[in-house]
Image (cartoon, rainbow, N blue to C red; front, side, top):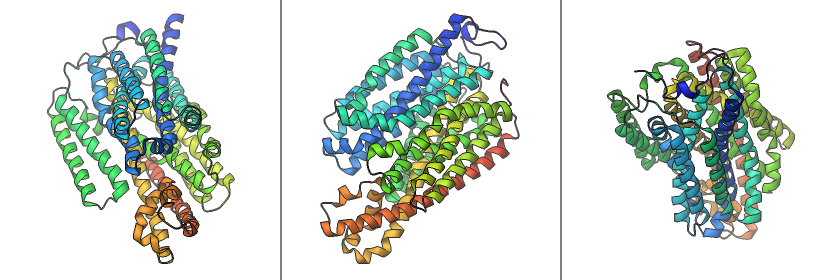
Length: 529
């Protein structure tokens, strides 16, 4: 069956044909729109993370309730990515882009007006569905509109937008929360969604996969359930430990659902996921690179602020500035990635990016054994360069392997690997962090009697989240609070070294695996299709 798109004759770029001025302007607007959608989603995630302590205080929520402000979004988002890509291929990418923007804007309004943690978390889950719809459609539009050299440049620009959101998110979040209150961390998305909808209406042409005659409903339901169970198991594993019986049961259910999904897809005439892709070593190599980028670099946007505030700058404003060595290279990294593709091809760019990430993680781990900020800033800078290279290249290479007619499926797969990698990094590295703090505090429990009563692991969880003093204040005498805080700080620093070392090792292993897998099929240099 042909994967040719119904709109090829209208606007698909032809190799060697220079588009007219009006068409060039339209495609620049398409690039800004698709990149702006990703920018808004990333900015929202970073703004909300900074606002969590204020939200907890305002809505009188316990620690578990505030955790679900993040978890509800992630679960809904990751579970809906692949079905969203299938919907974009079936009903049209522009139509799904509009649907995602509308749902995300309305859900943001609900979050901003929420008067309880339950209502807020309901809005966050709806935000996750809207984000999945618009991100899958936006990446599919990018993958269809731009080919060859233009695709490399387009995804470099897309990577810069993502880097700008990661760099500016904490700063913008702090300013908005301080000046206007936490509801505006969500309400700001409403006018932005309207502006992006207007830009999409002006510039994006409808496109779809004509072979996608009907939705693969069994596949969509099974995959959504499998990914939801996987995400929930990983989140709960980070909190309760992966040896917990409940966590084991949820992860076992996720595996069973995933196997049922594979069985259903193998028998469907037009499956949501083309399983033959997983027989292509190049696609597997690109997916490994995407997963490792998210788990070893992208995730550091969560862990580095915790370490910086714990070790050097307790003030959120100063910590945000101290993170600039990590954030600023994210803006230039995509252009470096495009240059690497021109000289070394896709495999070379991905492997180099992963090696630089491994080096950055290792340098940061080494620097964290001392007490000076400057070496840590150096390690963060190297890590930021590697992350910037991989940010756009991992998405572009994965989408390049898949036929243009199934761009929705490609974008769904790409985003799913990215966010499952992020979850793996959050939970896996988080488990290392909590275990390290626990092991450091356990010998000290004899000298701090209340520690054993409250539970060393519970204390370690709050120390890892950076909220130990606030949580402990009402529970222990003021005279011993300082001793607790110093012990937890030393444990955090020691465990952070282990966390960064583990990330470095994983990134290095992923670089080797990507190199070995992708050499069996040359995706090529710029211009290869």
